[in-house]
Length: 119
Image (tube, rainbow, N blue to C red):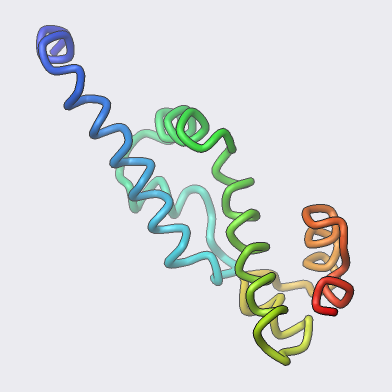
């Protein structure tokens, strides 16, 4: 195995990046599920958990859970700008069961409350 890695390092790097891309794709397809967990992502990508953690953080600079939060807040921002949905509806739409917790996370991330962001 080490011979293969030494002889074909580009193939190894490419597959590592593919794992991260698969994880990101899975997150974008499922961010709206309140039940989305890191275990779900690990299962979808089908590699060892700590290995995916290292690859993901190395590629994105963020832990997987922070990346999920970032995607959810980005999508919420789009909904706040482009729709008349209530903040509660948007919270549910991006995977938060508790609208108050969503507002807290949104404000911590963007420095504005969802209502203030909308205006």
